[in-house]
Image (cartoon, rainbow, N blue to C red; front, side, top):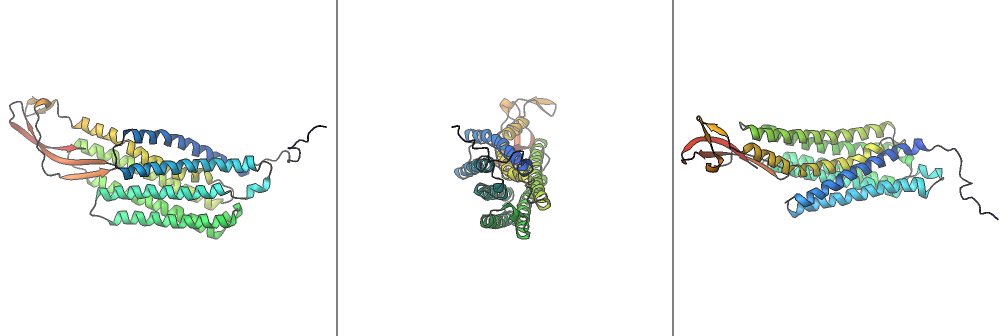
Length: 330
């Protein structure tokens, strides 16, 4: 007697793509972005000289990002493998999805604390901006906790369309976006106002400004896109691709900034070489340049980069002072 076909009772010709397409695309984005995070984290730990606290932060973020990526894959497993043929399961929210939301909120919060610290280092006398960033970030965490708690109570996709849930999601994304936007504006202001008369220093500050604006703009736009798609169609899950990228974009942009410090330092040091410098009609040799450090005139810090504008004294081959000019040091 032949064995019964275990799939014979499943409905035939049922197209569930409208329910899972957005989730599937979001999962693909999640794995692709995680693939960017892995080598960047590897490069960081093999090349950085940061203190243990910053290294621990990078390590924790990588672990959280990895767990989040696993949870997105588990969502696909729950819907398409564990509950294969069970159309009723598509109306539920799996536990892995709820946990992913919690981790996403945590990753964004930690990255925002990192940038709040960067803003503080840029201008330690102006505490109001770091405080505002921390308050926005903390408010986003509180609103995110309400989301996790309410979804855990219901665990139905239909609950995502409730007015209470819409308010909680809107507040979470809005607070996170404001934290990123405030950090971007504060750092951009400090980079812009620290420009001076030294071309190479200004070039560095302009590069830092461009990176900061690009990073802040990308993350902020992702926050508002997620919010707009969710408010428009909360139960179609078309917002999930944007949602899955939020934590990863925050994490990736942070680690990229940390890893770019060496190249920025090399650029500044290369630009600061005084060989082939013509002063007063004669060429100076770098082998005979002695420098005396005066009191720093300016200071800029970001992610471990310190740019100080200084005054130096150049000497010619007879060790006679021929000029005084400003210089910079990283």
